[in-house]
Structure formats: structure tokens, C-alpha cells
Image (cartoon, chains in turn red, purple):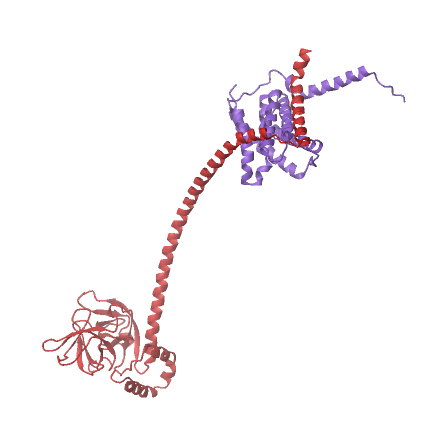
Length: 312
Length: 198
């Protein structure tokens, strides 16, 4: 009997355990009781582990995510930095192109607006190596029919004159060079003088007597007496004026930005140029061809404009 | 009526014989070869793994329904059953895991998984001593079989005791069983490392 029991003990235990659970089920279903104690123990047993698991999972996941994210961020940062540098370069290039286009447009408009004066656009390709000498080189030369003493201007004002002509290059002496001299006059009073370079960035207007009333801001234009620049071309404005011996010391702020020249116009003739305002020049530029086709209208227009502008 | 009614004593003897035969079949572990190797585990390993299985089963639900494909408590029950090869500990371990699984689910009455896993634990322990349970293929087949057997017990329990309509077999269950069996192979290999060297 004992042997039989020991042989069947596991099976008996299985039966007992299963029957016990069936009764437990029946108790729960029939009586609609919930075995809260077992659930409570189970939850109490498992919940701390789940909490620890969730905590460690989130920490590890967060650290891992942060690490991977940081690595990605670093890689992305490097990539974007390179891209930013490339875009900066590209932006500078485009800005440069836009500025160049703007300058060329201005030059072209100016040139088109003054078909009566033959002009040749040129690009500044270099400057003097001597810091005391204010000269620059342009990419036009003898092959382009350039000659010494031709005037060089921009739409803003005069720049200088050609002092050396090579086959494909020409050297321009700027108006602020100490060897330069330009016949000038005050637009308001028509008082004549000479704008000379002083070695400083700003030239001076000389031979103006102390009695002459000169104020800062007075406009100075070419007088045409030097046979280089046409009459009434802007030179600059008075920056300061003070009495001197025997003439006033007048500092002139050049209209053309002599330190930032890139495109210039070479005047192939000494014919008078009537300076037009920028908007007028632009609109005139559009109708340049028409103007060129009717050269006879140009002197009349110039005269009319001159009389309308008065002293300037 | 040519058939005559057998005497009550003979019927009783026949019933005892059938039960004895069933007991033999179910009690294979007890009658297995005593030279069969019984694996021992490091102290606390069984408890820790069972708890972790329950925790992971409950925990991974938060991270997607893919975790429903695998029944970790069932795998642990089978593994320790076939490894320890003791039907008594197997049934108690399975029963405990099943009851805890029931307790952790909010709508299952206590005992539903308990009954199923008690039987699975007992059978796994009994079979562990009779067949090779070390080879990956046999492990795969064993888990596949036990998964469906577990499902059949669950379905019967639900139908008979709870009056719920539970399927005995579906394609989803087939997929679940395949995934669970495939997952069991590396998991069992991992759990083998917890065995104490003999």
C-alpha cells in the first residue's frame, strides 16, 4: 500500500493541486469573490521589480539614447558646420556677384546715359605697391585705344587720369595722389581752383582765396580747364575749410570711393558730359540705343539739362 | 441483449487497471531511468528566473504587443520542468507561476493559468527524464507541443469552468507557438549557463 502511494504520489499531488485550483476557480465564479489576498501578494512581489526594471530601463534607455543622440548630434553638427562654411562661401560669392552686377549695372547705365561721350569700361586689376603712391591698374591698354591723360571716372565722380599705357594694361593716377591735379570749381559759386593730392586719402582744393566763403558740404566739380575731364563732372564735397596762407586749406571728400574701386570708365574723349541723376541715368540707360540713334538730340538735351541744373 | 453485464468487481478492477496505465504514462518521471542526469541550479536561480519571467511578461507589454507572442512563464515552467525532472517540484513550480500570472492579470480568475501550468510543469518534468531535451530541435518541438497543450487546457478550463468561448487552435496561436518555440531555443541555451556543474 505504501509502495503504491509512493509510486502514485506525484500523480496524486497533481490531482490535488488541480482540484484545489478548480475549487478556487469555482469559489471565485459562483460566489463572485475575488481572491484579493493572492493578487495583493503577487502584485507586492512583482511591482518592486517592475518599478526597478522600469527605472533602469528608462535610465539605460535614456543614457543610450542620449549617447547615440549625442554622437549623432556631434556628427550632424560637424556635417552642418561644413555645410555652413560652404554656404557662407557660396553666399559671399553670390554677394560678390550681386555687388559686381550692381556696379556693372551702374556703370552701364551711366555709360548708356551719356552716349555723347565715348567711354570704355575697365576693371581694376591692381594697385601700386608703393603706399605713398595712389595709383591703380586697369585691364585696358593700348590695344583698347587708351592713351595717356585720358580721364578715368565712375558714375559717382572722377577717379584720376591715365599716366601709363601698356598693351593690355594702363596705370591710373588717382586724384588723391600728390602728383595729381584737376581743374575744379565750386558748383555753387563757380569759383575755380585746383584739386590736388596731398598724399593723404583726401585731396585738397588749392588756390581758393581766404575771402571766398567756403562751407563743408559744398560741391566741387571739374572745370574742364585741364583738358582731361569734361566740365561739371563731380569731384567731391568740401570736408573742411580753414584759412591759410595765402590760400584756404580745403579738404575734399572725393565722390568716387577711391579705396574701393573695382569698375571704372575711361573717357575716350574730352567731350562735355552732362551728369544725370542715378534714376534718370538708369531710365536713360534703358533707352540708350534710342539715344545713340539720335545723336543730334544730345547737345540740345545737354544744354537744356545744364540750364535747368543751374550752376551745377 | 447478448451482452451480459459484467460483475461490479470486474469493472472496478478494469477501471483500476486503466487508471494505473494512465498513471504509468503520466508518471513517467518517477519510473524513468535512475541514471538519468538531473540538473541542479545555482541557489536562487530558479526563483530569480521565474520572477524575472513574470516581471518581463508584465513589463514588456508596455513596449508593444509583440511581447504577447511569447509566453515567458510557460517557457520557464517547461525549462525547469525538463531540467529538474522532478514531477512534484515541476507541478508546484508550474502551479505557482500560473497562479502568479493569474494574479497579475486583472480579469483572470486565480487558477486559470494555474491549472494549465501545473499540468505542464508536471508533464515537462515527467518527459524530461524520458527523452532528449538538450538538442535545440527537440527543445523546439517540445515547446511547440507544450504551447498547444497549454492552450488546450486553458481553452477547456475557460469553456467548462468559466463558460467562455476560447479557441483550441487558430492561425494566430500557430504563429505564437512557432515564435515561442523559436525563442525558447536560445533562451534555454542561456538558462543552461545557470546550471551547477555536475
